[in-house]
Structures are given as structure tokens and as C-alpha cells.
Image (cartoon, rainbow over all chains, first blue to last red; front, side):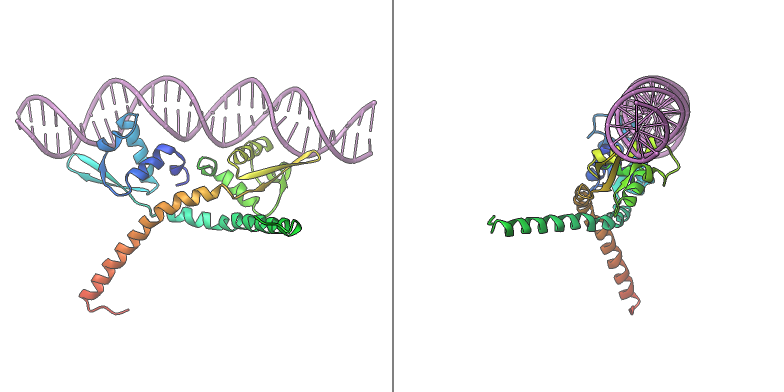
Length: 105
Length: 105
DNA sequence: TTGACAAGAAACCTTTTGGTTTCCTATAAT
DNA sequence: ATTATAGGAAACCAAAAGGTTTCTTGTCAA
């Protein structure tokens, strides 16, 4: 999953498929690369579960499935406290500084 | 940044450096690869801003800087509603089903 | 039923990635 | 001063990633 979202084209695809189900043809129209290339990106996204495919007649339509991003959120949540700590530390520093100067901002 | 966290070794490095500042030597001791390889991973993390380096005598110590993950959080936040929608849709379905059966719970 | 069209499969190419080994430089320790 | 240690730099390599073109297959339209 981390790998899947590492590529900017693929992130862009997720974005595009957020609220619409589209066939490969239409999707690839949005990109400066071949249909086949886009198709391969879609496959990678599908393997990561980030996109669902549905066959409709002779076309394959894709839509977003954000579910797997839940895992990313859990991963992130772990680190959240560290950037919050940092802000906390910075804030304390600024306050000390203000005290020293009888500071105004 | 997305690229930086795509590699499992690098994610592991972040984890390791969460609450300690360590020199390359010690860090690379945790991995089955050469010191140089670890060093390169650290450089990539540093370029993404995810890790800060500090020279102390003849060693270079690294520590986590979670700040750039903020961006990831913003990116994720956008998609959060889509997996929540999914849950919402599921919930509605279950409720409909319960209604049909005169459901309890 | 014949032709057009959508899209995956296969083969191929180039660049990037993750790793190695070998060398070099700066700082310590004796 | 000399030797040992920490760690980056350079050159190199194999495998994976991102792309291309060509070929097939399955479905729709005439």
C-alpha cells in the first residue's frame, strides 16, 4: 500500500476516481502516457485494494476504495504525537522568550 | 516524502529513531545490511525532512522529525470521508435489514 | 458475420532503487 | 605522531519500476 501511493500518477488516479467510476479509456485520456501504462497503474492500485474494478460489457470500470487507507491512518496516528510534542516544545520556548522580553507579539 | 516512507527499511528506521538519537554505527547494527546501505536510507529520510542529523565528534547522530508527516495527514484527511461513507453505507444496510426482521440490538 | 473498439498480455527498453565493496577524510585515543 | 574508528563518496551491479509497442481476445454495432 505504501508502495502503491508512492507514485504521483497513482495518487492522481485515486483523486480522479474519488467520486466516479470510469473506464480505462476515459481515465487514460487524463494522462500524457499510453493507455497500457495507465492500465498497469490501475492494476497496482487494485492489488493494493485501493481501487475496485467492474467489467461492464467490453469495458472495465474503476472506482476508488479508500478502505486500505485506514491502515495508513493507524500508522500515522502513532507518529502524530511526535509532531505535536514538537509544537508543544516550540510553544514553550516562545513563551519563555516572551517572558524574558516582557514580550508582546 | 511518499517515496521516503514507501520502503519498509526506512519506515523501520523512523520507528527506531522515535525516541532516541543514535549514531549510524548503532543504527546499522539493527539491520542485516551494510552500514553504507543504512547510511543511504538515512540520507533519503533526511532529504525528506523525516530525520535530523547532528554531528557529534566523529559520529553523526540521527533522530526522528515527524513534522513532514503532517502533509501526509492532510492528504489522508481528504480520503477519510470516503471510507467513512463506506461504513455509513454498510451501517444503513444493516439497519434496513434489521427493520425487515423487526431486528433487535 | 464482419468489422470496430476496449482493454489486458507479452516482450522489450531505460532509469531508478537498493544494495555491495573499496577508498578517503576527519576525529579520537595511545 | 601514529594508529584506530566513524562515516560519507564513488564506482559498480542486479533487480524492480515506469514506460513503450505489438499482439490477442472479448464484446458491441452494421
